[in-house]
Image (tube, rainbow, N blue to C red; front, side, top):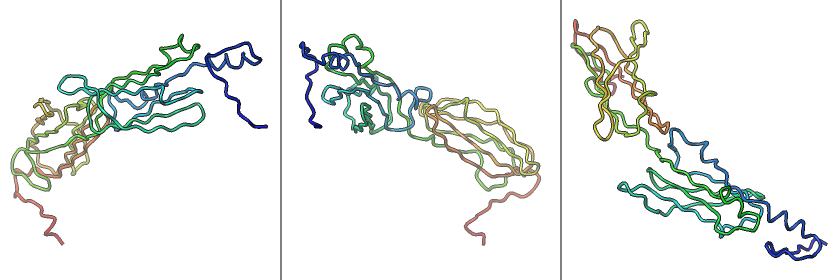
Length: 245
């Protein structure tokens, strides 16, 4: 009583029930653009994306997945791994990337039924994006952590990341004496692999906490803190935590 009867799609005769078959033919497939939800400034900070195909007559052999990467300023077809998870008419393709870079992905259906030929745009997906999963690396010079300095201090901050978000990144200086926090002004100079920030000189005697929080365009963040004092009128000293009991 539960025997399934195969109904060949695309071959419509005059038998009873052809209206049901016609509805199946006219049911178009759709590739959802859910990858867009994870992009920040055109970047992804994960090495995997998902593309959802909604197709009641899904056959993975009828779909092609092409991934291109920009290498030496040229677009090159690359091999990537992917997995497929299906739930009813929804089929989720998870595509994995080996490394960071600029990519273009194309997913499309290769064969169409009679009713789908009018909706070719609805069953093709193409998107360009950049994958950046590497947080910025921060280097602070001009002042060492846990030191007192009998001079004016002019910190220099360098970070190695070409995709820095300068508007979101912050450099703050906190006075330990009164708790006042101020954001330092700086000039950012590109050195090819990142940026160099030359901060305003700090010339007032006090204990300070220099906090550097650097974001890149993909949303990755790195934070570095330096505790020091400016002590032009007193002794110069350096803490050695490993020797303190």
